Length: 481
Image (tube, rainbow, N blue to C red):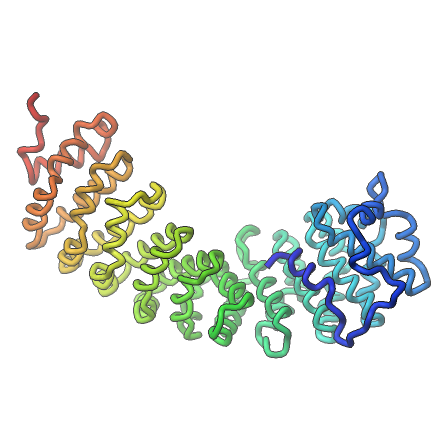
């Protein structure tokens, strides 16, 4: 949800009491960009006639001037900071803040629109409007304001929360964050636009760009509110649900959200959202899966019960933009309990990933990420040797042998590490694995790695020689010419 999009959608909405603008007021259509440009002087100030009109005792004159300022700030022709500064430099902020009152709903609407756009400017510009008292007044007015004004207030709060560490602190201190959180606590009391704006504002506060959430207790409360809200809205993917899930994922970097997810009963929903059509939502959900994978056996089991492996398989197959994060999620699961690794070894997902490593034209960076899946599985399987046979049946050795032909030295090194790991395990299937590897022409390909100029002096070549000396001595020496 972008600020400009929300403001644009709200610009033509009427107040709750359906008041109409009088005929002498400036209509939206009549104001083109050339006229708007005339509102700013060559020395980057608001035209004196508009400034004088805003200070006029006549309501219509003052309202018309206020509308002009709002339209100027909303114009897409300029960057927000370019039109915000003339408003500040012309000394209009005190008058704008005075309009934040229920005394006149038209002025209240216009002034909150103006504040939304000013808080989309630079940090320095936003600080100016905050110092003018823009946070406490809207927070106080929120419960008794019309709905479209409430939306503007929440967008303003979100802009402040997401701008900088200092402004986030000030907005939390002055009650702005609590305001957004309270909307999510009781979403039934508010409109759809209001709830969406509140969810976006909470997510803005949770961003890591400006360091950790400043209050651990408040962060914990927020996690509980978000999980409850997500459970109540799980019937359909809405904008507010998307923003709530993203906010929860942002908070997972700062505190453990897994327990709240389990307690809230939303694990299955989180897993299913891995195949959401919204790329932004899908990415954040996959990162949430990674976080939950580290949350202990109970969390992993719940994800398993929610068909996590099947959903991730579908995600990798259907959404190329999310494959890297999906591979990371599967790799994290591959570090889990033996029951999960066993299920992964028997699932089509492992076969898909092994095929990707050995045959596909997948991008190198994605292949590297995917390679962590069998590597992590093997580390677990060394301690649980009964897991090795299913991995071999899934095509592990075929992937290694084919991968040795890669022109990418890093991928060759990964294949050799995979082979070294599986041969290092003491299990009764090792001899069968060696025979199969020999059938796949693996030993000769290992020797080629030793001889190839691009890999001859690498650590991978040294490991390849050790494998050949231990298991295929006839290939450990350079062939005669």
